Amino acid sequence: MKILHYVDENMLSWSRPWLQLLEEIGKKEDVEQAILCRPGGTLKRQAEEAGFKVFAYKPAAAWCPPLCRGFKEILEDFKPDIVHTRLSTASAIAGYWATKARIPVVSTVDKYPKGKYYVNSSLLVAPSRAVARHMKDQGFGGEKIVIIANPIRVADYAPKEEERTRFRSAEGIDENTLVLLAMGRFVAWKGFDLLIEATASLKTDKPFCLWIVGDGPMREDLLQKTKRHFAETDPGKVRFFPFAEDVRPYLWAADLFVQPSFYVPGSGGPEGFSLALVEALAAGLPAVAFDCGGAPDIVKEGVNGWLAEPGNVNSLRGALQRALNHLPDGKMRAQAMQKAAKLDVSCVAASYLEVYQSFYPLGRLT
Image (cartoon, rainbow, N blue to C red; front, side):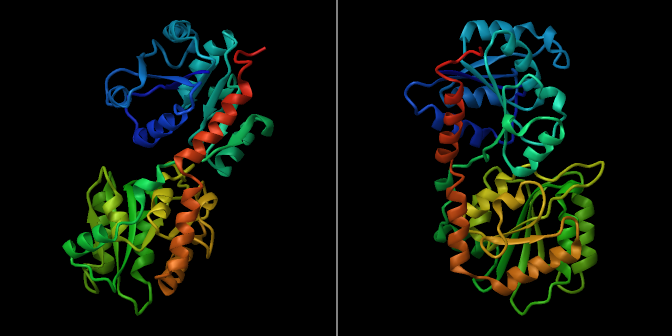
């Protein structure tokens, strides 16, 4: 079974877990894979370093699939049984040419795109119920949609107590202080402004602090909001850290993960599926999140975390309050890791192989 994985980009923030997934799929003896991406950037190099056969192609006009004849030539060269796409333009281009060649196209839908890009896809893979609902609203029947979560390699995030102690000590945090951790791009729909506001009025006898890891256009606004809320009462309560390529030291040092993303008109959101939430659970962190997007597929109230009404500061404050009153909790940490284990790359690879097998050995469409 030959699979061509096509993403019409040359850089991906999620390239590492994606390539790990493909590596896991490739462990099956009768599977041969190749990757198609744009030239330049880092993705081609990363894929080649991981041992994949890589085709580089820049579409002549990504907005007009019939003009992208270079894709047709790559199909004729590699002769895949299945094309698996990520992101909208790749799905549109592959859908046009692969179906002409009677090759099935499996399209993973990561966010909330327009349905026009996927009209020729044989099957849509949504990472969450929210994305599946969105595609149904775009006119796709339920029989054409399956839900398969995006994975991580869970073992990479297993808690490391010695790293936790070292990192907290370096930051001057004792073991009695609960560390709340949030991370991501500083844009409106990520909700960090609401998190700062909600944190400012928490009432608890337990010492805690909030760490925010990331960067983006709202950085100065968030710093100013923090000063307004905490300058007089506790200026060290909220700490900002720069974008980190490896977030695991922060996860290992923390006690609670918070993801306050939600839909903001004109800005975007919420997360169709959050790898950061899965990474946090894999590190043994219960999580607080707004009850929207892919979060309720991952976080279960009172089991491995707490949910809040989307965009509601008071509700977020209440969820944080419940978390602080409850933690630390060894059982909840274990349940967080159990949920993450179900989203390990090995489990997700097996699900994708079942999808591929549904089109193979017939392979080409009839």
